[in-house]
Amino acid sequence: MVRSREPESLRTGKRVYLRRPQIGDAREFLDLMQASRRLHRPWVQPPMDRKAFRVYVERASARGVASLICLREDHAIVGVANLSEIVRGLFQSAYLGFYGSAPYLGQGLMREGVGLLLRHAFQDLKLHRVEANVQPTNIRSLALVKALGFRKEVYSPIYLKICGRWRDHERWARLAED
Image (tube, rainbow, N blue to C red):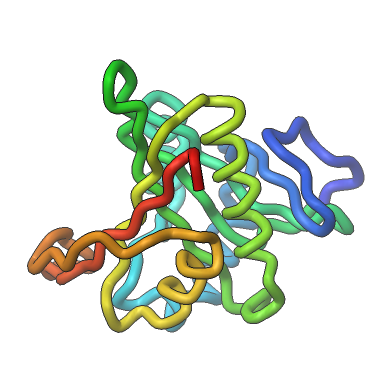
């Protein structure tokens, strides 16, 4: 569903903006995820039905910052960028998760959108550290975190369970000072 006006955004860039997901996004989001199934396997397991999407919206707003990356031109959803497990106190840190969609692949939209979320994390939320965990064979995601200034810290065997299997990950981080 293409909107006629831009909803309230967290951050706005040249071609995309970030906004919080809403239950009313379910149809557009799920159609996009269905069209991107081959792209996502085995890297990520996005919500694939209305119930899972509802859980994503409710959980994300309670425990972090969930954002949809949308085109400024027609407000279409092109991807997702989330901050989760935000820890305050002495740590001031969060985990970054992101995934794009097949119809918008290779246009730099994810780089711009995730970059906007990082600015939100460091400037608005005043975080010190954002960590991204990426499977070592996920070439596109590795290229994205490198392009956004993340540094590889460590290799973590059987770190996260994705699509029903424990998978190795590389842990990358970016600091506010970067």
